[in-house]
Image (cartoon, rainbow, N blue to C red; front, side):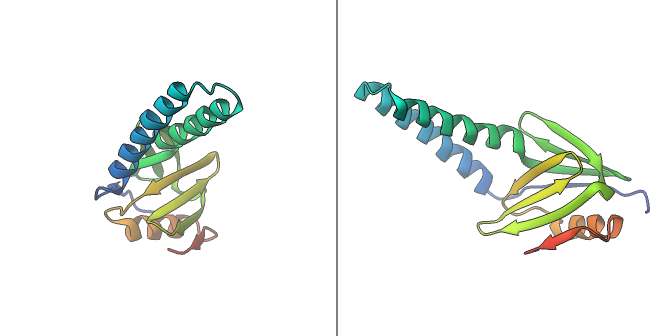
Length: 136
């Protein structure tokens, strides 16, 4: 494979909009739980769901993909995950402009349109012909 150096970024406002909605739900829902005085199982479940949503938003959702030769770096708000492009074993697009990229040591999600998306998918499929593409 040739030595490719490329950056793919999420464009548009979809990911920012989702973060804003999550922040509003966190504030409004938490205020409602505290004002209602219900600190039972509902509160535990509510904060558990919020924790899971924030984990996904800050750690699992990538806003940028950097490719340098055989190395790929997925950048999220709080984390960078690195792998080889040949270790990407599936790319699946879902409704709402979301996609999941699975690789040897984990997965990342991408929300919204990505500049050069089809070029990245082609690089991944070229590096690993067994890479499963679904909805792409």
